[in-house]
Length: 431
Image 1 (cartoon, rainbow, N blue to C red):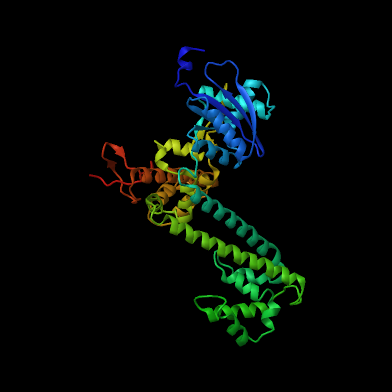
Image 2: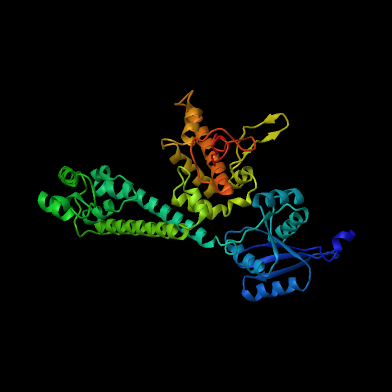
């Protein structure tokens, strides 16, 4: 080895291959030709043993690992609290490097540790941000739990709309307006079949169902319409005490429970972030509501750590990539090698923004499709452009600390184009 690698400041390089129950470790000490191998179990005793071993080298410690589910989080936090420098290895880069080094796709834990060590040696690593250490763990858990509950509610709604209603009350679907409301499920829980409704007189039904349907405009007309619809229904004639109705009500009860859980999570998120400056800035952007802002903060953390919006676009997987080999030149498209939840959130926020009236997102979308409004391929490209603009915008407003202001076009101080004119987020008035 060269002399500069064996100075007291030369770090000890540690490669971790994370697994569920045990972890393979490879340690390279400056001045020694052979790396040290060891295996530790996923226990506190082995964590402490590894920490003590690394501290005994009395050198800076640089540790690299691949994100493996959530199994790396506990060990990484333990090592980070000990003061070691932590690096993250991209799973895609690890796979490509392993194939290049071994001329094979074959993998095993010791081999992966060797490849991770090689990537650490050449600097092909990323920064690791521990959510607990950086104060974003609670935000991430709220965001992920909301996502789980929302997906469960969507799946349950599909079961109701495609299985239970076609059998037991087919005509009720036309009274369903929004999956965010609880009244429709509460009504079906009380009247899961039209035969429950027609067993009552119209006046009796209106009196019983009056409080269930909630605050509705023309409530009397709505209940009258439901009653007349029930009289002409073609639903299966199932008994009130049948197991089929019990199962239907069980599913409806689960759906109402998921709605309550989602509302509770959203209220908690608003309470937690109401005083958060970045949260207030993000919610000023058209299309970015409380949950979208929560997801952006949970998945991206502090957006100021991205020095340029292109870095943020690459983190989201919204950077452009082109496959080229020899004379072949493929189509340029999104790389999608990034955070999928963040990319989806920006896409959905863009869809909402272009439906609103006065903002630069809708203006850009209209200009993009103006020469062929019915071209589906062009509209899809326009949606992608709006999502990328959304990413640039949220990065700009957080980095500059200014809320979104629509249609302040012109040249900002320093000769730069205003960020709302298709290149970013914060809008600066012409001076």
